[in-house]
Length: 79
Image (tube, rainbow, N blue to C red; front, side, top):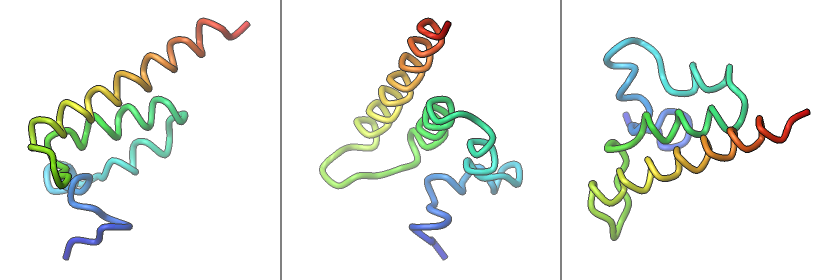
């Protein structure tokens, strides 16, 4: 059964391959890195009404880049 809140299919596809979900990894990372990885792992696996799979995949990868860029800037500005 697809549990859209606790175990959405766009994250659990990984569990079928190696026994872990995105949350099993991202909960051990800081916010920016966890979000970036979350978007990378779901790219190509999440559908959104009004968008093609390709458009959604590109959007998710662009979101991952945004979080990675934010983390790089955070590190650069840390004393």
